[in-house]
Amino acid sequence: MPRRSLAALILLLALVLMVVPLGCTGGGGATGVIEGVVTDATTEAEVPDAYIYIPEVRGVRQTGLVETFTDDNGAFRLEGLPLEQELELHVEAPEGSDAVGAVLPLSIPADVQTLVQFASLVPGATAVAITGVTVAPRSVELPRADLELFTATVSGPPTRPKPTWSVEGDIGWVSPAGLFLALRPGHGYVAATAGAASDKASVTVLTEVAPWAVLIISSLPPSAAIYIDEIDTGKKTPWIARVAPGQHSIEVRLPDLPPASREVEVRQGDILPLRFRLLPCGPTGSLRVLSDPPGAAVMLDGRTTGATTPTNLAPVAAGDRSVSVLLRGYEKQSQVVRVPANGAAEVTFTLMPFAAEG
Image 1 (cartoon, rainbow, N blue to C red):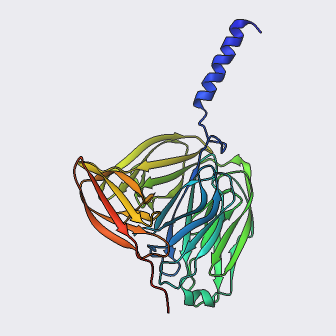
Image 2: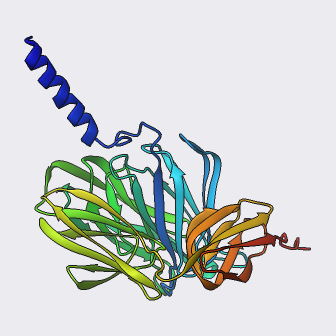
């Protein structure tokens, strides 16, 4: 090969390596995030203080139990999880509740590194009365980026609880209402679970693409209102939206923080994760949160931070901030801490175990 051609080939290869993001195939130490919301299956109200965990994760950066709790809006966030591995997400009711939780099989796609999962907790009395769940349609084939609405009939109780929907097979995402969005070619299942009963439908996602694009929209803090092209979608982060190809303006809003926005251009069949960080305006400081024992989930002003003690939160809006910590087997504790402008504050919690039932 001529020297000039060889040099051009080397330059082209270098440029390709520059634009391919590391970790897109699960290597390079990349890890994933699971975000979601837990609600009551009968009232659809958000459930705070629900216990969320994935047992025995052995990924690039995690070994052992990965856990957190839902915040005041029922939202949760688990970070540092392995990609393209079969995981089990466990959702348990808050301390003192008799609601039945859920165990959901899932896998975090390496190409998006984000998974959105919703769960419904069925009150104990209702769960006992459930005799079965039936999902329809029984089998579907969809092009990638297309939608299918599944329904679940819950038999037994006089009031029909909302089931927990989940996807098996790493092929897509399903909303709390059973709306499935095809994300990756392959075969899998869409499942509905209510109490101890469950059922699932067969789903095949084709390699061809629908005339749409998909946005996976998340924010920290979560529960931010989502606006697409200045129109209120009525949804909150985390959420997955289908949009037409072309240019779009995406904005997320929380009442006490400045909004965050981004302009994106998508093509037919694109799947684009959009992660927003809502930062305070005005004077800020930092806040170090510690607990004895450590490992407690940290909530700031009633919202999940995705962090566990010991941790340093920054930037934090100056002024009085409400801090809560939760650890499995211990009572929830909260304090109001004054964060100085351009300074640092620290708070330490001594956690008390729940009293043993006699």
